[in-house]
Image (tube, rainbow, N blue to C red; front, side, top):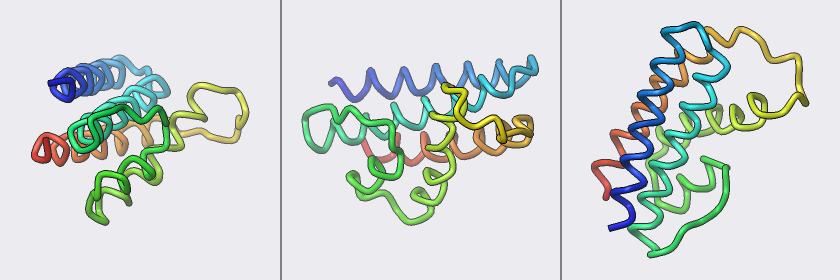
Amino acid sequence: MEEKAWIQKARKDLDASKSSFASGHYEWSCFQSQQSAEKALKAVYIKKYKRLLKVHDLVLLAKKVSAPKEMLSLCRELTLAYEYTRYPIDSKVNNFNDKASKFLVSAEEILKWTEKNI
């Protein structure tokens, strides 16, 4: 069951995000939280469609797996972390400490929902 492997990866990314946050690597924690949520949603997608969808847009993934409205809301902001933590395209993003803290909570909620739905 491929989806189980994706959930395990999602849990590892969430654990890594917590470690990064604890050591003050807030920008990296944001990215790892996004990755955790992405992999968790992909697990549900794989369970539902029996194939992988190669995208980084959490909102699109959440819609494809019929996630509830509150999950879509969490995905909306968290999906942006993929770009602004990986590419130097927007140096206006700051306050990663607050974002990392919020994103950890969002990723945990998404992971909990996905685990119930695979």
